[in-house]
Length: 401
Image 1 (cartoon, rainbow, N blue to C red):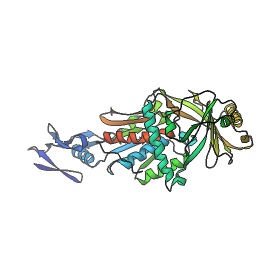
Image 2: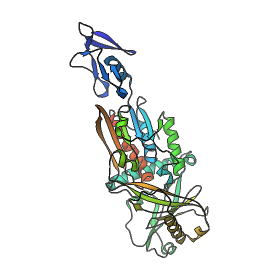
Image 3: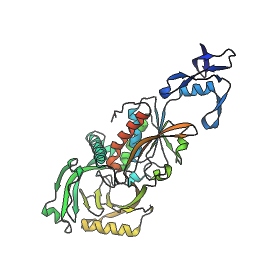
Image 4: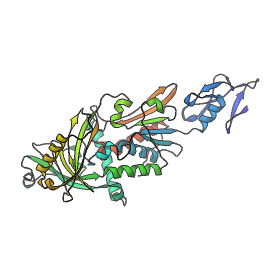
């Protein structure tokens, strides 16, 4: 047995008599050593990163020193929470990089009402909706009970939801606090209503929460790269695992035509006297927040327009004023429009493998959350982190949050 010097490392190898070739160690799953079946010339070069030719000892040295790298693509609440969950869960030998063309305050998540309630989740199986939504609710509740709740921007919000016909109680009625049917007196507040609910849920100041998630991710040695990823092949040579949390961008990045926009528009007003949320069955809502009240909204499937539509704005303001006439005196601070990443088949949360130019890339998909990004993000992030752990060798996932 002889010793081969490869970079700064020494490896045992079976040298042949001419000392110019050897039966060298190769690496299977988890870099366990086995032996090559045939002798390899030590001077032979191999295509390596970015097309550079390297000798086998150089490649060998690189592979031994290379740690596992995970890329999370997407800078919204799903991408940030997934990156954090992974960084909190995997060994320090695993590098996690968050890559996105846009970060807060430019994401769709920033414009969200930040209201926990399952909404626009397509055909996501009910048991998974419940699992991921409940997991997120109790995660947010733990944050709310902590001393950093003010920095994170999470709190409780109570309010009313009126309907023009009877509906069965939703599955999440047992998750929120104090769910009950409205009394006749409460129904009279909105004369068109025939039925309604009152409950207390969790409200998130989304921009504050996104900043907190990013800060915490970076504190766990997470790397951040502002870049648009156009193809999965771009990731194959620098990363072992890619986690796709691109929302509507998955339509282009992974070719999923089932992902379609559901346009939403809202108005931001100053109305500090509004302390409860109000909603009616046709997507009209009033959500008070820390610094403003959000009035919404629209639900326009297949509409790619991200500009504010004046007619939509007039309709929203008029409808919200009918719901609460005091809003007629509120100062309008601005309007916003964004696209919910809806997927008729429901949330896609699964893994697969693809090979690009001989390089294996393990992929985890976590997109298609529609209007339920805030509602399901943490439950989905934990599930995605488990899939990543399985992909890199079965590391157990226990979030430290």
